[in-house]
Image (cartoon, rainbow, N blue to C red; front, side):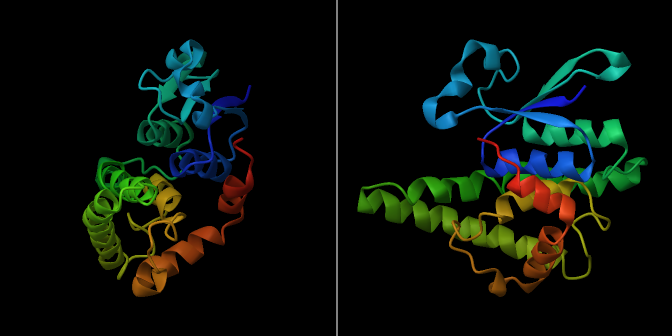
Length: 208
């Protein structure tokens, strides 16, 4: 039976659609229209108690029992462990994957997300302060990524779930007001990721 994928067309949603396609897992999209506050409906809160997308329900979970998973980072780890794909078998290989996954979850997501927010703030003083603060940190994070990729093709060496996580937000670089030409290693990595057929399918599948 296919995985039920609760999502909307956001960076966090696209992380999982890309991973599902790359792992060749069957899934059914269950759109959660966050613009209409569907994420607060009781049935969805049973799956995702923090009222955030994405979330999944895997009918063939551990021991063959259904399991639900919320939080995009947790979903990526679960899917990687379930399939053995894009998730190293040994702990030493898992460490850099976890490091860069947490980098995305803790920084390269929350900070560009604030850029998205303040770009829409009407009060000029509030908008200016917020954009100065969050765009500066977002650019710093792009710099961290660019230095990491100077000698590596992917964030953990081999392609992994960390790349899917970071790709979901790099996909919105234009909304971050970031020109990837200023970060050539990120630009090279981004082009390589977006050229992958399964990744392309993950970005075109309808999440509405």
